[in-house]
Amino acid sequence: MQTRSFPSAPDGRSPAGAEIRHLIDGETGNMIHSTVPPGQVNRATVHATVSEFWHVLSGEGQIWRRDGTGEQTTVLERGVSIDIPVGTAFQYRCTGVEPLEFLCISMPRWPGDTEATAIDGPWEPTAPEG
Image (cartoon, rainbow, N blue to C red; front, side):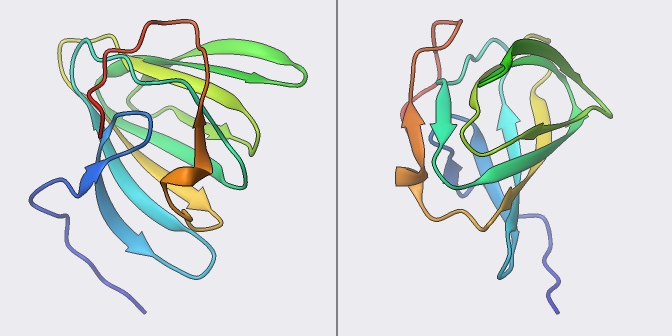
């Protein structure tokens, strides 16, 4: 069993550019808290082996997703949950005046930054390298 408090400082950045805090790790997956500041557009990526579930806590944004059946852009706002199945191309951005904050659960657990491959997305990225 694990219990962990919310980290006071970020642990780093995701390959896409979000500020992340590691919340908990397990054998079958892990969970992070992600923050995207107002106006930031993160890099488009695709994962090789990991699927993700997101749940938006606050802020406003958009996520573009593309798989073998098509593509869509979804509004991200408080209470919205989405999935990113393995092999799905995606890019997201904060469109509001407050930071976009969400929980991200990765399954299986995140193997490292080589998991994500940068690709071309619909928006020009502005996120800092991380």
